[in-house]
Length: 226
Figure: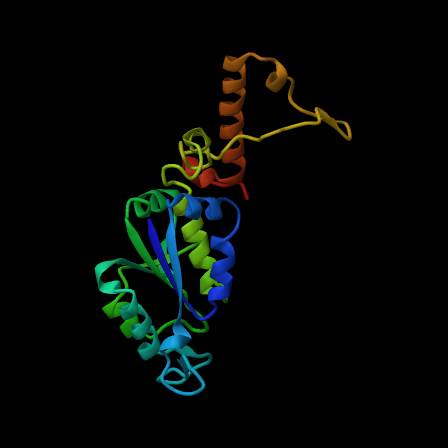
């Protein structure tokens, strides 16, 4: 998969792509990425990329010219362009799986009050929200989406690791334990060291249901008690 990220702060993006599992995916050639500095396409000597909104109001808006130039530089009209935004459709595991099918994705990292609507009208294929809240960094929301997507690609992590994850089967994932067996009086459930795999599977299923009912009753269609 090829990923291009347009940002005012590409150094935030670089750190993600050069660390941990993503770095290995890049080394293997599973991921090909590039970050584009929007400021490189500004016209004035100060490399200004924002201006006050028409109609008044607080905050600043990312200008259309630098963003359009950055998008044209990556041939955005031929690719799937995503703009993470609180006004977008809600992101989910199902959406991550859908996006993982694309060969090439372009992300626009917003800032301030967002981007000029004409950029959305002319270039953006999808506005995606990572949740019902607002953050200041489009880079962070972009990386959340990328992280959920790239790990689904073949060869990034083992397929076994994806099977029982939260949301993969309509439930949250069961609790995990590792050594030591006894930590400050809290012991690992005996069933997990029993060697009885059918009992272990049964315990994990029950714990997934319990955890989902407790933390995300909406997933199971249950009204929350809170």
